[in-house]
Image (tube, rainbow, N blue to C red; front, side):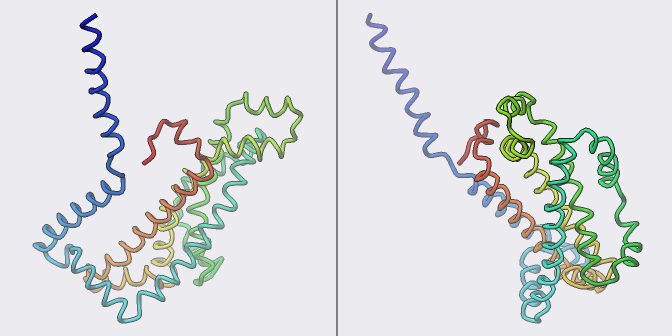
Length: 278
């Protein structure tokens, strides 16, 4: 009896610190900020001691960024590249998602078209750029075409895989209620495949950025790609890294925006995956 009276309060004391620790959990953005600070400090310390032709460091890159802004080169170049990137990427999403849904739902389309989607994903697009230039010229159209061709396949394939991963029992429930194919697609298949679709859309961001730079290297040298290649030719490494970092930061922000959109559209996904939100 005496043992039970002293044991219960002792267990409660063990639980309370854990609960208070959970309430005081550090947000994820603090870890991200700390990681960035550590990387930037280490980069600055290491980069300032090497030949500026072979590498650069954050403060030198920031000075090059300010110089590009003051010269009026960066704004128009970013606008030109961003326009092609957005057009090609949005077109890839608009085409890739419906195509993946149709291929995933139709065994005939999967057998007839699926092989071309897989082959297209493995296509060495760089080798085809001269042919694309002959078809579309050297303007905006060829850039959009290159970005589209590089971004559409990950979107389509992930959507296709997502549709195939939808439990058959869910579709059978829809059929048992005499729902039409369009209703099953809209109310059951699309929401269930949404995490896969978002994963494909996020993968396509990186593909689109790489495609944009390749397009600007191999077609009319313009936009951020022109700054990169002209700076590299004059061994100005700090200026060359400015558009590279801008593109990396832009892709990261876009990816974060799509991830936030996924949490709004499919809030159940985190609970299903067991991921703890901050």
